[in-house]
Length: 266
Image 1 (cartoon, rainbow, N blue to C red):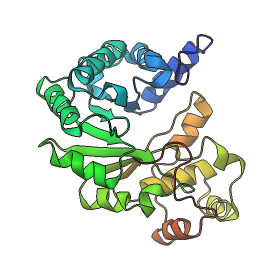
Image 2 (image 1 turned 180 degrees about the vertical axis):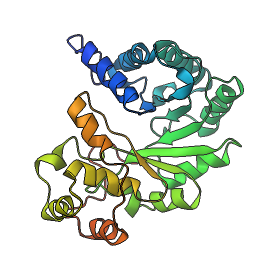
Image 3 (image 1 turned 135 degrees about the vertical axis):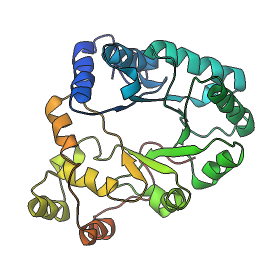
């Protein structure tokens, strides 16, 4: 929202704000943003959208970019993000990607300090391998609650690398981003998904999201400013897919990729 890596000054801010507010009115409580999205403007839009709502009823996540992983930089980065969103705390704050150039212990020390100050309530990571996730947990007494990564019917890097199993075995949530391939699945669903659509009377998008959240310790994120798409996404919850169908999709979905085409685990 608000642009990609830079602020898009022709962005339809009103539509973005309406989408967020409609989501809240429909029962959505978790909103994910990052300082890198639209150079911070996405955080501002989120802040404007949630201003009239009870903050304590919402769960807000933001993320710090690796260039800001030094101790003081991370503290300042978080405070700036909080200011843009207009909130006193983040429910969850993530390291957006692993950095080999800044000592992990220094970065984790800053996250622990943010917890002590009450500026963040939970710590997580994004796009971390299972090895770096384990290293992160070993450096803090605070629980690393999640790893936000690319996982979908098509892209299976967390599966093939053992990250998903690690998360399930260590009570860490795997938060799957881009669950439907930016709408690709809706436009060109393979026969196995079409079969599931008929069986459950659901759309390809709903099948893909439900398949993800049916798995232990997996939740998902989806981004849309289209109200119809929002309603469709929410139609992925409130029903259960049979275990044999979950396993069938896991094994037989065609052309599975072992590595993300967007952000590889690091």
